[in-house]
Image (cartoon, rainbow, N blue to C red; front, side, top):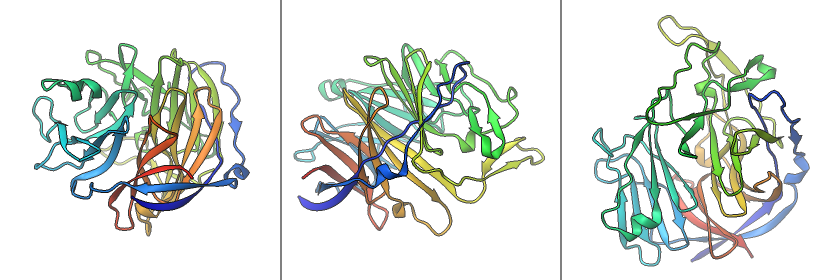
Length: 356
């Protein structure tokens, strides 16, 4: 395998927003923590360039390659291969409007579960990867959630939890909307908040939700603000951390005739903060950009860092990756990460990062 050297530095942070009366004061990360560096090696995994529809990859238990594909009538959204010889083992979810079909797909691995969100059809599927690989007749049916918008839903207790599109606060912009951070729902309940709040903020709110029942933790990593929030499983906010980079975000409020009223959108460049995650028993890992994206930039021009935290929100380590990171998954055999980066041509490349 081709070997590449990467420099790696230390970083941390977290941030908060909750409907609780007692809100912990936020911790703050200093920019200086980004200057401590060490060296990582990156091995490029070969024999995957034939997967022409793939937009990102995951590796499960160091032996299974999962390709998350772009929407295309010639393939499924998810394909599974043996990593050792690239023999196909399973595939799921054809594009379409039929039962257990999807029109879009975002995916995340948490333990032995692959969580798949279809935001176009407002549905979620939870794939037990071990069962899928063990039983030929295994299926993971899609569940439709009656919500206004579904981007990042995950299983929570016996229901599902997702980010609330009306939960938004930016004091500098003068917009503070004290909606609960999360929506907890199931396929029987219709959740409608449209006329309850002054602003429509779906276009400026996004985040990644991680739940760990064994550790009694729910994590919210903000996609557009440099913040991470640590909750217990009852959704009480325990800790928040902000920084190390304050993104210079600007907003515009639209009131178009016949359109959404008081719709908040970004003015100019879009802030990129936390975009993806993976977990193991003791830690969670977040990809962080900390930069603005707009005209004249390509996605592959943005560089990411991977932050490592314990489940109490304590910073452990940082791995700067001098590329844009699409997805990450954790090795079970060693202290290493499988990372999908974008090449200079914008194509997905799977590398394995570990210390020299």
